[in-house]
Length: 405
Image (spheres, rainbow, N blue to C red):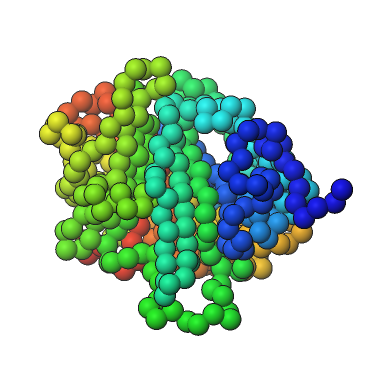
């Protein structure tokens, strides 16, 4: 019998929370979505890859992207989309695929060949339990719910291959490539062309995703024996505040939102840093692109871990994945386009200016400063303790005398 809902493979599992099937989400907003964000990099900085897949249940869309920068200063962008239903159980979008081999443990990520010279087949295996940034956070404006979000993050071991720009990189776990995953779900400004409701009253105060002037620092780093999540904002007046998802807990975290976890079978309990100090930060040629930094993180027992941060990769720009109107039609993610695959190659050799291959500048939003980097963390008191992972250091106005672009 026909009905207003469908059944998914998940409906076989005894995990229902309401009388609805897993075809239906509780939030009716077109901005509701659920999906994955993976970053992948190597110790030498040859490859800086971010790939994502996301479901937009209320616009009936699933889309995916891959953005990959290489050491020679190129960024390869591939985006794909299709109608979500009736194939809601199938995590494939055009040339993209994701297989959940074991939840929170093992995934397989794939990108078949397209007109853009970039493809991969990667096995992702967790190196430690995930960190749940609970509770989820809700944002209201003039009494209206305008955003809500939950995140879990996790570090992983990688094996497989990547082909890009005429080169093929093959790697095993022992080669030291590092993967990090952010699985998030909630309501945001997707699905409607990244525009506010045109028929609603304008807000009394404009909403800012940036908050006060200063820099957002956000990192997912894997060390030989542990994984680290770290998030904070460093204001221009020197104030440091915990950042990230986590709802009301952020007010109790002080200067840093962090988590240290150990491998599943280690028998070690996870913990969090209690304080952080940005000792210094050096930017590339005076541009807002982090080159090196020194962070001092205080453990619960008072011991201080002093880390030297060194950027090893070229930046990768999220707009290439469809953020901020990055699709060719300018409408952003989660919008119905039928079945479509598109992409391009950019020149990202400049620290903050992006150009197409003909030399024309491709303006980035919210600015050329906003990009992701792979960074090496070296413990200054134990040089054998070296981590690698994804690092953000981004700001919208000015930070430590460096102006955003």
